[in-house]
Image 1 (cartoon, rainbow over the protein chains, first blue to last red):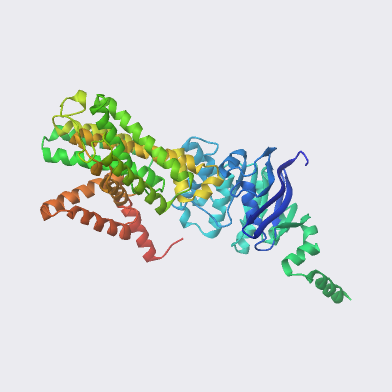
Image 2 (image 1 turned 60 degrees about the vertical axis):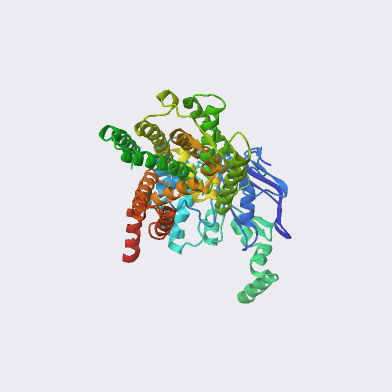
Length: 254
Length: 325
């Protein structure tokens, strides 16, 4: 464990009945990095996020954040420590305006209502939600809700931001607009770990990638390394496909 | 609306209502205003937990009855002055609230399960109050009539009106604070999405516990007030379903999660029940039938309550005219 590791998981496992959702996962997220967690559907990525942030307790293993053992500690206490997650299925406070939504996050560090609302405005600016500040959250489009989810988490001034598929459900243009936002957040010094299916984003944004399949980490490395890894290709496309693809490629070249 | 405007509104309301006894001495009018204020108080108490916190209690009589019994027993058996009994009643009700809250929120009870637990507790307390001695059992408790301001008993309705007005103003200030403060923001966040609130650092257990304590305290104040006005309490009045239903209906009809909704709801329902009582004579239970009908109509046509009619109509209009972006 290097000193610059912000989040360290060791041997984390969690089962639901007979299903081993996450098995013996160890990883360490470097402070200041922008990394990604990828894997086929049902690989256990969201479960792993829940185990990191405290929404679920691991059956075995430990989670350390900023040098503290936080295994199974409640989410609101982790948020206070500086780890905030977003949700794949967006969860806006629908009855409230965008500004009020973001202010709830800002209240973690700001007691006063006026200060929190002002901070909400500043955060909205960063994620491109400024024009929608006074709309009810229920009036936002999917892209808007994803931004809101991001803004609310960002308003808590996290050290580590766990983004669960902030690009899912967006069209190519919206993805292109969102990517600089995520990069900007990382550039501002926030460590970002994202679950993502949009490979274009993973390849462009992430410095380091972990691949989860059937609850186990099967590969890690730079985006180029993991996408050329046979185990990763087979996890997505099925057993034996890596060899077949190589044969087809050499056949075409010959 | 800005905080300043809301505070100005509350001040204006307080002054206007406080002047009513100076303008008229009509017993009927003063009695109506006093009872409407009392209904506002219990509706606003329910609104704190139900409207702002989204925890629908069906047994708010639990806190009302506890406040009422403490107020009566403190005077009868403790020989304590009514003014001193009042804070005891409020604190006792709040404690019961915290106890029920700690039990049900600890185990994550929500929605209809929470409603059922509060209902069940109110019923348990009613049966206990019927079967033990110090509550007077089925006979109930009579607080002797000793009219004097020092005893929190007044010769005319005006005195009671001012007392309950003071309680209502405090309740309005608290809801105004909920609309404009961090605690209120947290409470509404927990109501709208508990997981999202947890992710950004809100402790839902603590927030809900504080809300039920606050809500119960106002309910206790209303119970104590009831005893002072009517000098009588029994298990059916204290812990029966009547108070619980009155509290939640006025809040829902008026508009949950707003500052003025419960005021509107209480006044409108009181006007309605007075009107129907005069219209249908002494047909028993007719006001409950009206209550039910109005509640159904409100839930269907104006889900935001009277205070939200404007918004409901706007939304209905834009839904018909198509969404413009």
